[in-house]
Image (tube, rainbow, N blue to C red):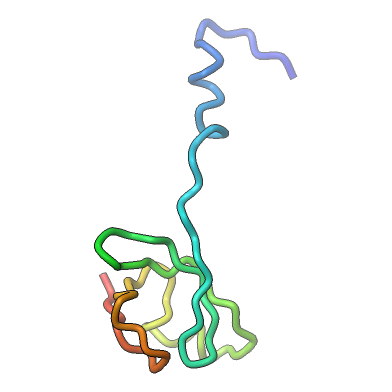
Length: 82
């Protein structure tokens, strides 16, 4: 593909050079999820790894929910929906 444009290439391709967020996989009471590290010990749920459909219907595990990573004890504590 050839681009004929006056826009510098670094502006065209900046989305490909963006730094990916720091993701970590955590386990809460047997449920694995991928969490994006936030500030001050908080993490945002990005993805669930579960074969149980009920886990996806639980609003505590909804993508975008925030988790206080400092309070996690394996019992599902530390959730907050924004």
